[in-house]
Length: 232
Ligand code: SAM
Image (cartoon, rainbow, N blue to C red):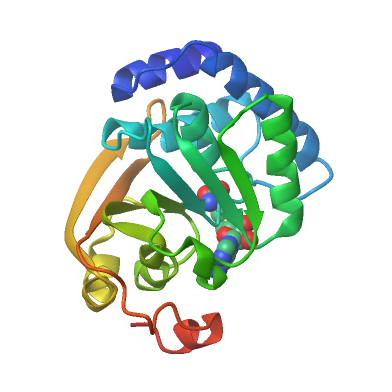
């Protein structure tokens, strides 16, 4: 795993701080152990975890500088991308949020075992986090919802001047078109797409970066049932 990660991060142009590979290894060990008794991830084994979780998530640091910044990962599951970003960028004040308590319990165990400081693990729904409104420099999310819905869950939590970073598949064109209205209504401005190949795989992924220009109107986010029934 260490060799795959060292070569992969070098290929992505993402620096690896001291101790990060050791911490990713320890994270993998805990993930593998817990995944046998709890449904955390369908991606298993050292090589696939290294490539499809750790390299895929760490790739974001090619475009995002999180050091000294506040960040939140929404629908983080077993910690992707948020926990990987925290390990690779230890000076980030990171919030990991997921609606499933048992997943958040696992994340807290990993943070304790790895002695990570500056991480807050929250069990809750993104659309109900009123106390965290317009709090974060960067909000990330992977594999949680289509972009139009995701914008309503995530953009309200981003500070004006901050960035929402959504990890998507090879061709997010259709989702981008569908989310145009949501981005504008929720205070988003310029949208940029960066594509990258996940080293050692055939996967090409996209990072959709949405700049927040104005505060999100108080009417958003709506209740999840309403968002789902009537996406912006
Ligand atoms: N981001 C992780 C990854 O890429 O491996 C997990 C993806 S998993 C498919 C989606 C996660 O989003 C689940 O853990 C689920 O509990 C969480 N989730 C879905 N809707 C949410 C919401 N409204 N607020 C917080 N978490 C949510």
